[in-house]
Length: 87
Image (cartoon, rainbow, N blue to C red):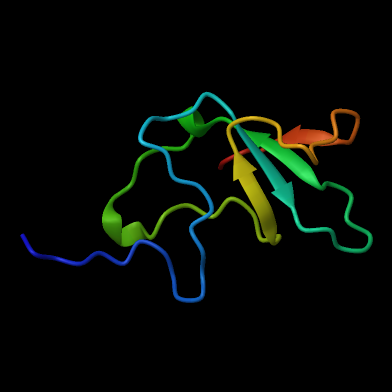
């Protein structure tokens, strides 16, 4: 149809893209003073699929440093890790 869709807002970066839906995503946030949660997990199955005009789904208002399907080298197993909840 020769249409261009704006998938992410200006001044944004795409941090993760996969052809299949992974079972679990590991989200790490950029360190900030007095931040209680520095990492979270997310199940993509919980997110409903929306149309192209919705511009995606915001995971958090914090700055994200990485999104991966496996725990990265900097992932702390003993740190406070919570599950992302989508309303």
